[in-house]
Length: 424
Image (cartoon, rainbow, N blue to C red; front, side, top):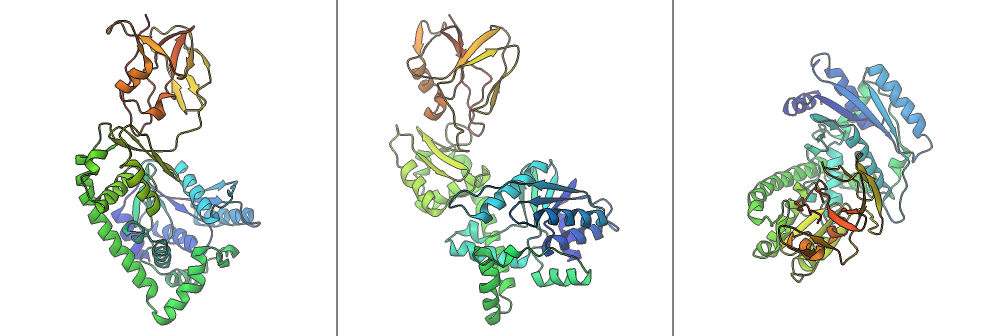
């Protein structure tokens, strides 16, 4: 295990390493093993992060235990207490995992790596879960040793170690580990595989865990080769706007290649990959839609939209009331909470204006083109997608529209410039 860690840190040097520390056997072994390396590798800097999900009655005591362990090992610890709300029909595991990684993301700085204690058996279970969900090569590649995460990376240095090796290490060093009773609850899919399926498989095939983990690694290598090929192909499929894909160019590909391209495009955009059913919806409802249609396919954390020949991938739009009217004293920035945007006035703006949003029927005066022009037609001419039109801040003096705010950026993952309108 020590050699595995040393090799990992040599391959992936970082300014600092955060260790996800639950207090359970796996993470305690990782924390202890990392701490033991500092004698011979003093340049390694470690910090620990404990997430209190608040789902167990003993969670506060577990956090206190983690503080004691980190004090003894002289590793700084940050404890994040969450107040999780599990929506009806949602998986407790999935909600907790999302919240946990969101907490990691808040603390990770550029050049840092967060470490988790996933090991060989976890990899085998992940492969089986994805196989049972009908995943393709992306899912069957299971967990990579390292991947980009927030402003740094997320690493799993123990993927080559078995659960038995970690248990032996814990026994050797007499580690006092937390035993979470929820790990025995086989209502959860991963626990069911771990507690019932894997022991049965290992009775027949003793090396099942190691073999399944190797299969995942081989799928990962195939995925890496495919990603390289698709990355070279994506620029030729670029739409008219940055970070979009061209519908007409996608339609020259066969169905399998269309799906592969869409998956790689979404992966590079940092979006969660959709289930096969959703991907088929994109192929059918988005790519095959009429040129004047504006279809949308949604899944967790992503929306796929189309305007003209361009396909957009974006985070779900925030709730926004286009009826609101905001008074803006332009000496100060204006925060538009519903859009998560801040407007800053340029030189020459009146001291007090109002900011409104499209209701329909607006017209503006363009001196270089002569006369008033329909804002609707101008937005069409400028290629502003329909879902953005009611989200554009319109600046008024009294009842006179004097401009679109020039520093307002639309969806940051598909930005475009909107010319400033000059008042008459």
